[in-house]
Length: 167
Image (cartoon, rainbow, N blue to C red; front, side):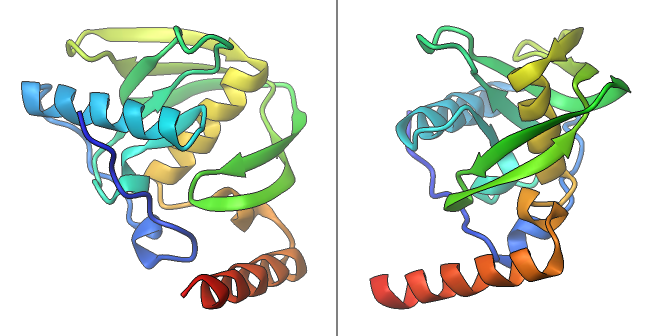
């Protein structure tokens, strides 16, 4: 397994729309394991392939306390949404930034698992937020883009200043 470099906002590659996976292979399963290792090391609870510059529709999520709930979602699509919740979100591609975002409270998602078998899952709370957040990445959208232009400009300035300091 290998740690993968995570793209940081505002990297334009984060706005690339991911392509559907046409075949679940051993190479793809290796990518999923590498993505999981990268997510846990970061540390985070979700990671989309787009964030590691692989533009395929693959997401890994684990919202469990003990890191035993890892699940891969290949070609995920939300087929139902209900309710509304406001959650403070963060993102491995926007390190150190946490902002409130409005999301559906419950979602039903359809995807393939690591073996290529289709499944459906109903999620609520944190898992529902993570699924929506990671699918946004696959569609080329980063959570800070839900914020007002003023907040977004402040975040961009903060990130630019931070990158100048570390450069």
